[in-house]
Length: 461
Image 1 (tube, helix red, strand yellow):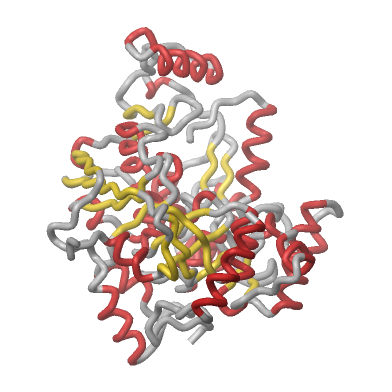
Image 2 (cartoon, one colour):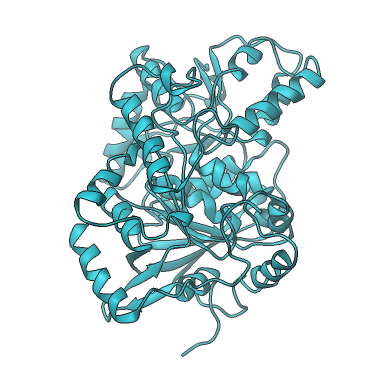
């Protein structure tokens, strides 16, 4: 058996409670994040005779059904959207798990809140009932989205059955050009491997380009891993990661911090570790990138033109391209730079952190917004910081930004914005039986040993 391991393998192997001959493994889950759309899980769990096994490892925030303008629960109109948020809050009060409600400055998009609070840490196994849970892999943890049945499985057992995926390393090397962001990097990657290129793999992003990125930019890359077909995208923790996490509320403190850092530094892939697939990307060749179709794989540099489907030899791909162009009402050969922008949205779990807002403000500084623009910070803390910076640096935001930046926080805005965008026809760039089986394994093995050291504690320090 080879001793060299990849970053993913080190973390995955450490969390295996039991593994079947088929390759399915029962994994211990260190952190479970949950949002409002899984509000029914608690009643269903109770009806099945189960309880939350470890509420101290469950963290909740409503982010899908919260209207941008709502400040409290009473601001949400009666109906299912209000029910989702209200039930999540009531469940937290009854069952004792951590909940960042709408009145809490820490409230926000779940994939922004986790890293911001230090709930997300290197070396952990983290899940959430949302496809963009891969975001947290930027901290050097294994994270992936799960379905509704799996959410209940984790609530009841603090474990999850998963098949060990293949491993892929994507090396991006070279100095990025002026103004090139993490979004450009991941769009270039997806354009290269395709929207299904990562299916069945856990992707590790590596190389000098990745190491030079800020943590916020790394989160953008890990976040969009699912758009490449992979559920998990991870980046090795380094000094930037450690600096980012230092002092955050749920990060370890004192001697436990030092112990954690020593462990985190052992996580990067070993020299000689073997991947099932490796891909290399020239970072220096990446230019500002936009998507022209209804899939992120349909991406082109800002200096390029809308591609011609007739040049695509694969008939299936050619048909998809034709459909995408018809949907977008675009003509092959059109220069991308000549396409007008109808609306601008800055936010979502991909680009709503303070670094994203600063980048937008820098471009807009001293100018006037001339198209409908919506800016939605990813959390209450980011909103406050952005407002403070705007106040302390008058003129930092263009006219039209200040009103947008005063909006609330949340993920539901993305859905409502896109719905309105569709109405206006504008272009916009942009398992129950397993619980019982698991219980048998846990009975035989005893309470699963938490595969973490003393530093891996929960609760704000």
